[in-house]
Image 1 (tube, one colour):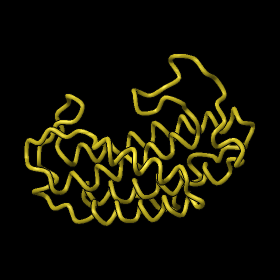
Image 2 (cartoon, helix red, strand yellow):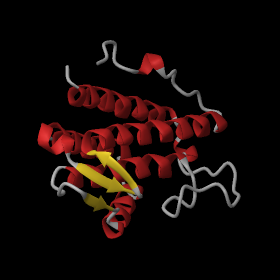
Image 3 (cartoon, rainbow, N blue to C red):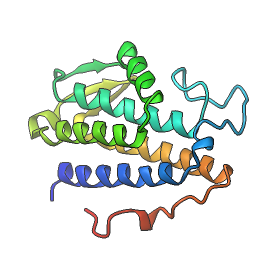
Image 4 (cartoon, rainbow, N blue to C red):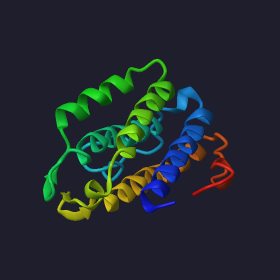
Length: 175
């Protein structure tokens, strides 16, 4: 298994595990704000931290990145498409089946990620003032979801809901 295949396996497993946290979260706690102060935000894109806002934030980023990384030029300086980000965030926020809609978007992202060839994976890009190879940025995407899963885990526990055990919620056989 090469590095790209390993990323695909592990990223898909992390997404599925993340959904288990969402599945055990009581509906009334998805938009619960346990603490409000000026530091309880992530940049200018998440001004109110909730379980739902973190989950949507990770997915929206992944949708944008999966569409951009495969088609951008070598040396491209990438930035979020704020109009697209706001539109997809609003759509997911109003979803009647958030996990189902998220899974559909994730599957589409995975299909886009799967077709990246070595030439694409070796491209150099810039994101938020940092330089990456596309393959390195894929691991950054994995880390971004993992980081926010940790945030979600703490919020689920603070909401007095039983959070899943991390290691037993991955596939039996991993990459």
